[in-house]
Amino acid sequence: MYPTDTEKIRQNLIDAGCDRDTISDFLKFGKNEINQKMILLYNHRKKLLEDFHSLQKEIDCLDYLIYQTEKSGGEQQ
Image (cartoon, rainbow, N blue to C red):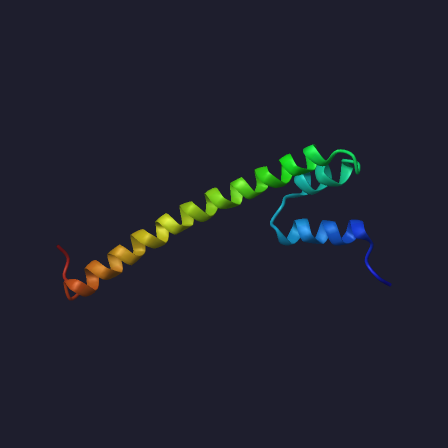
């Protein structure tokens, strides 16, 4: 049996990290409610980007610490 369009969309939203409420809200909107769908998708994208930037900052801090540790031969400064 092949997945329906709704099942494909649901799986795509799951794969994109959307929570149950977002998925449910998205699927409740009809075909003519594109603006509401887009708002949900852009809001989720914005959240993912904010999370990514936060993680990138943490990685940058670790990279700096690695660099400083290697530079000093492991001695604390």
